[in-house]
Length: 479
Figure 1 (cartoon, rainbow, N blue to C red):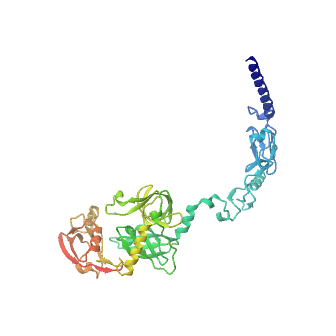
Figure 2: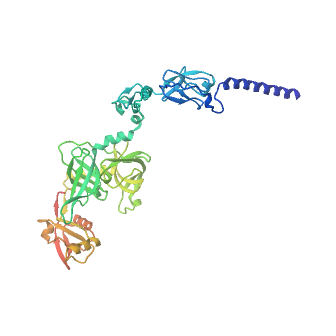
Figure 3: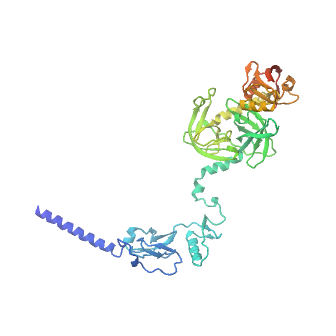
């Protein structure tokens, strides 16, 4: 037992002696435990490559330039590479603590071999050459040369396929592909007294045929006097409403122009998966071609879940932001295919789109209706401009018109167009429509809804203090 103990003690002593020898080998000449500036080597007056802290983080030394020595045993004042350079030992091994302990020196090499452009408009072989020229300029009291662009001067992102932006900016690629086929839609109405047309709403749409057919939301173009479409190049055209499905909230409008338009293709929304990247593009707040991105939260959100009682639609839910004016714009996948129409926004991060399969069905049915001559290319028309009468509007009108009736709801007649069914039936300006075919009228929308369904109208209007009954037969016209 005593012999075993003595053997262990001897082994321990031997190990400590070996550690001491190693410590002596690697610590002598190494960084001191405390930085003493008086031990730092004298700095030359001219450091063309700039000044840096040594490996001990104690002394300022002249930075080594490209191809110059670096490293050492880690003592005060060992040469250190300048900005954008790294110390490389023979064989491409980087200078590390292990290499330093072995007392090896290396050579400063540039971290990047890519060309760069300087603020002087000169292309440099790499960033290190630019830094060298900049330091030389500063030493001569001249402005420094700034690094302003990766790649040679005058080159673009596409000239550098190794750029991360070039490789991974897939969203920008999608937007570049689809933007020319997205349109801004402006809706106009005439004002009550001035008779001037003013923009009252806006929305978005996208081109589905090169001869000018555009898909948008039905609620975007409903009950508007004039629909105007603005293309990406700024050109504007009046549009005609070709077909509308109010229940599905899809509309087809058309512009006539001599040139062919770029179009968007419909993808299959049935193939869509939760988690897919999507891009929403439109004209929120009349700001043309505004882009937002997100993912598909769910592919089938029932309309009844959203409080839409009469809806049998399954909407696509996305966290891509859809704002006022985005309505009617496309929701696209990363292949640039339309997988929905931006339609509803509940709150930030919760938005809904009509699936592209529903759009495809609408377009097929619309084509069939138009081909058979029974599409919604005709609409019922009585020739009247009106607005909803509210208590505030009623108060204003009473101040302007002495015989305006004491009524606060209904459809206020702004204008009756001559030689129309409304004029022939005896309707007059300032009348308030209060009933049609026995149905109470509270808003101008109520009147429009009944006109669409009824071929003969028994209209009750309040004129002054009298209720007058009129008969109006709507006529069918092209929209």
